[in-house]
Length: 345
Image (cartoon, rainbow, N blue to C red; front, side):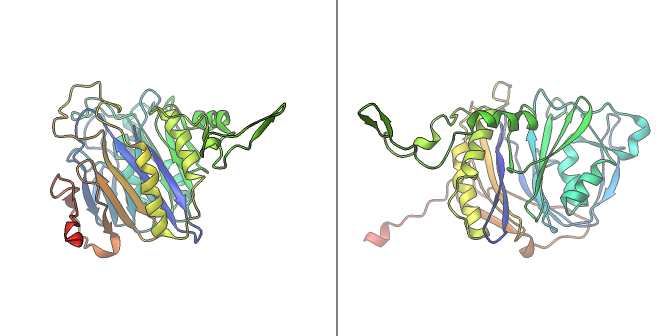
């Protein structure tokens, strides 16, 4: 259960932001640097014998489960990609050994796109040349059912899905994604909520009586408040398209973090919560929250353990030739608290 969206600032700046939820165990994500030239090998149902490719771009990303799999990231060209859980609806093509050299596991999609492409047009063309398949992963216990949101430096966005074994690419003009069902269903469902508005409802006159709204916020009456993917999709659209004017990337990052606070989920409230797993060290099903400043190629994030916002900028890191570099999201799994008592002493 994850919620993602894109915001555009008045000066043309773009941010892509999301929450990462999983309720069965900690994904143990790390900040990962991938240098251009690093060589990858795709996975098939036979093993690590799929497509081979070298990274064309430096990449800043968040991995998971101690692997090279990426959940979220940005490259030096300003392409941002995120993977989102899509249970019950992700149907990948069957593995064809004849297409082995063009095959990757679906869980490798984020890394493939980020290391190879700079724009949505390049992504759309590049997807035609690969087969993404479901590969049973020992760590997950099953092929990962996923779909993906991709945003480039222009602010344009697409959603990538596999249904009935076929690739589907949807333009994403509203810049929002959650989970099941399919993206086109979510867009149709929005028609049930066209009455939503940031402006309060006017007073109604019935006979000789006036009925005024009971306080502010009446324009959002009917906004779904549960945590199902359809309801989160509607809320994300409503919240991202009724924001205050956002002048620049700095304010867009702040606004994205504010909006994402509405999508935090407690333990037991996310996909995977019904599975057997060790959650003893977890404080939330929202494991981390990320905001990617596309213009400045910068990651902002906070975690289930520490809501202090931290940042990593592509301009300020050093890529090791041929090698991946990683750091943990939390150096200490404790909330960072500033004591201001001395100001009142």
